[in-house]
Each structure stands twice: as structure tokens, then as C-alpha cells.
Image (cartoon, rainbow, N blue to C red; front, side, top):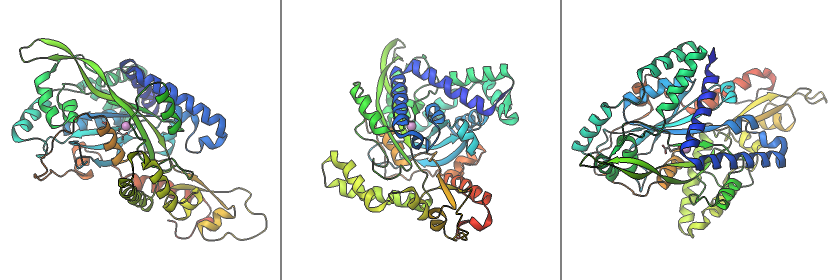
Length: 462
Ligand code: OOG
Ligand code: NI
């Protein structure tokens, strides 16, 4: 029998092999990431593993895929359900200024601590908002709906195996093999010729719409390794002649604790694709839709911490607007130093970051009674705080990653009323709850508090 987490780990590993064959620069990225991680481990020692064991970090990937319809999203949720991955978070990228991104998204990932520790594979999954009149006029919308209704992304055999794996939380070895084979195949780039005119019609609205609705299959858009020093990674990739986008998205590099998520990518590569022209002949063309991305993960922020982060981004925008573009990093670092606590302890005490709390064995031997506040408990050695890693995504970085790899801005009719999508609507579509990331982190913290003796529970903590 193959249990769910082994299925998930095997799927991630096979997807990685497949993607490496399709996009050789990805293999370079994985190699350089591994080198950087080994170097960081050597120079920083145990501290390097504070946000995850080297085993976890080395195997860690996130993927991104894009589907066209609620029905397709429901199906993909079944495939990920088989792997113990649940939808977490809702991201609406449609209002991104400057580019047309007609998608709403969620991320499928494991939610339990031990499952995350075994294999944290996650997939950022976007669904085309076909019914949003800001992007698609009546005629294009009905042609698009008909095109999408007519395609099949996931064969019935795959879905049947997925349902079984989800219900039984395992599959017999031979079925597991078949499931993995079909699942990886569903995300390969299809050699089927693309209708050039149809693709171009969608591209005029949005390159993302064409990538999703212009072809009869889906494919993995990128697969992202995790790295312990993303600035060093950026330097080494650039040294190898790989042209990276001009920034690292998310928080700046600074002397304080890493929070949330920092990401960067290199540009989409031209890939040869067969194109069918209006007269029916097939020619070889090239499309640019996929790219390489890498990320560094930090500490999850509480709702208050996240609100502060979002506010600081606004401050950075304002100040950076008055300075040359190359100085944004310096501006961000200055803003960070003014407003964010420089230590993990402070992040915990000010309620800005998520931690688990643990009673320290052999606590103070001077016979004193434990203080009642978190700061006292930490400072006097009664409790130890371990950071909780941010397992999710950032809407602005996601939009930036989508955008930085598009050559055209596309078009959007902002005079129209957008159709409303939210987490509830996506939950209804999938028949599964889109989980709230904050609630998941809170639960993890609260479980740790419940395990420590009552006398050591900080006042005000739930
Ligand atoms: C997804 C872009 C978002 C991330 O890491 O924020 C993303 C896509 O391009 O389909 O993957
Ligand atoms: Ni990504």
C-alpha cells in the first residue's frame, strides 16, 4: 500500500523530473538552489534549519497550474485531495493594475504539521474568470465557454483512482503507480497543434487567458524550489548568464528575522509549439508561457503582523516613487528597520508573528514562580518559542510573478462591473472548504499552548 504522503512526495518528485526534461533551465535552478542550501548549512550550522530541516527544504517545491472552468477546478481538487492537499487561501488577481489577469486562485497544500514536515508540496491553482465581462465580451465569452466545455483535462480513470486514494488515504502499489503516471501526464505540455487564430484572439485580452483557454490541455506553468539565501541564488543565476527579473518580490533583505515569502523568477522561455493556421496547415511556432521561479520562506505573520506588512508595502511604494528605481531595496530596508521588530522574540511578544510555545525542561532552579506574561516567560527561560513557517502565497508577489513574465498588458474594460468571486464561491464550486490560512496557523499555535502546563500559559494567549 502507498499512503497519501508517499503519493504526494512521489508525485512532486516525478513532476520535477518531467518538468526538468521540458524546461532544462529548471534543472539549473534546482542545482544552484541545492548548492546555495549546502553552503548556508555549512556556514550557519543548526541555525540554517530553524525554518525547516534541510531534508524538507531540499525536497520542497511549489507548482503553479491554471484551469478554465469550475468543473475543471473541481476535478483538480479531487486529484490533489488524493495527495492529502486541501485548498487554502483565496487570491483575486483581477484588479492588478497594469495587466489583465482574469483569474482567481487558491493553493492546494497539506495542512497538518506532521504532513507538512513529511512533504510540503503545494500548488498555486488559478481558474479563468470566463464570466467576468471586464475581460470577455459576450461573443468571446460564449466561444470560450464552448471551447472549454468540449475539452477533457483529466481522464475518468485518473479521477476514479483519485477518489479512492482520498477516501482510503492510500492505494495498492499497482494502482498508485497508475495514478501517478496519469496524474503527471495530465500536466505535461501537449504536442497537439494549437489553433493560431483562436490563441491570438484570447491573447489580445490576456496572455494568461490564451495560455489557459487557447489549448485543449493544461500544463504545469512553473515549479519552484526553496532556497535558504535567495539573494545569493539571484547572484549565482545571473553569473551563469540567466536573465532574472529585476527584483526579488516580497520583503527586502534585512538584518531582522525573515518573514512571509520572498520570490524571484527568470523570464519565460520560448518553447517550440505546433500551430494550426486558418487554412488547416500546421507550422512550428514558439510560445512563451513558462518560467523558472525560486523562493525563500520566512515566519508566518498574524493578522496584525500581516496588516502591518501590507501597510509597510504602501509606505515603501510612496517613498520609492520619489527615488530611482534601483533604490527600492534600500528604501524597503529603511522602512523595515523603522517599523518591524528586529528579533523573533519581539515578533512573538508584540503578537505579530506565529510561533509554537514549549515548556523548557529544567526551568529556573532558583525556586521563583513563573511570570504571567509571554515576555517574562520567554526572557526568564520558562518557555521557548519556535517559529511557524509561512506556507502560503502573497497576492501582490503572485501578480508580480504573473506580470513580469508577460510581454503584453492585454486589455480590460474597467467600465464594466466585475463578477464577484470569493472564497465561499470557490468552496461551493469545489464542494470543499477553502481554508483560511490564519486560522490554520492559530490552531497550530494554540495546540502548542494547550500542551504546556497551565501555570506557564501566558496571560492573554488563547
Ligand atoms: C501563478 C503565479 C503565482 C506564486 O508563486 O506566487 C505563483 C501562475 O503564474 O500561474 O506561482
Ligand atoms: Ni509560483
